Length: 158
Image 1 (cartoon, rainbow, N blue to C red):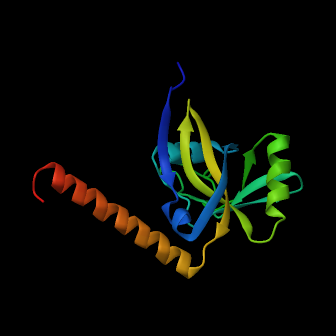
Image 2: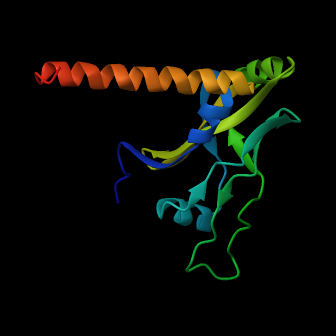
Image 3: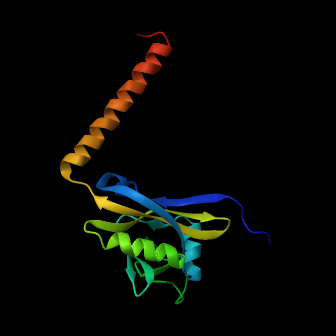
C-alpha cells in the first residue's frame, strides 16, 4: 500500500495567534500510539490548552487533547498525555536558548499529516498585553473594511 501524499490538516490553534505574537516556527514529528493516530485521522484533536517545554534535552508537548479512539479497547490512550516531539539537536538547542529569555513560551500552532506522518507546527511565542490584542483586532477590522470598500468600488457601487 502506498503512503498518502500531500498535507491533511487536522487542527489549528487560532487562539494562539490572538493571545501571542509568534516570533519563530518549527515543524516537529510527534511520538504517538496506534489509537492516537487513528483518532487524529478521524480529526479528533484540540490544541487550545497545549504548550511545549524542553526537558532533559527533549521537547515535550503537554496539554494537547487527542480524544480516545471510539473503537479502541483497553489499548486506548490517555487523551491529555505528554507527547515527545521529534526535532534535530540544533533546533532543540536554539529553542532552549530562546525560551530561557524572559517571556517566551512554545505553543503548538497546527497539527497535520504530511506524507502520512503526523506533524505539529510549534511556535516561539511572547504573550500579548490586552492593548496589543485590541490593536490587532482594530487593524484586522480596518483591513476588512478597506477590502469591502475596494470590492464595492470595483462593482460600481460607490
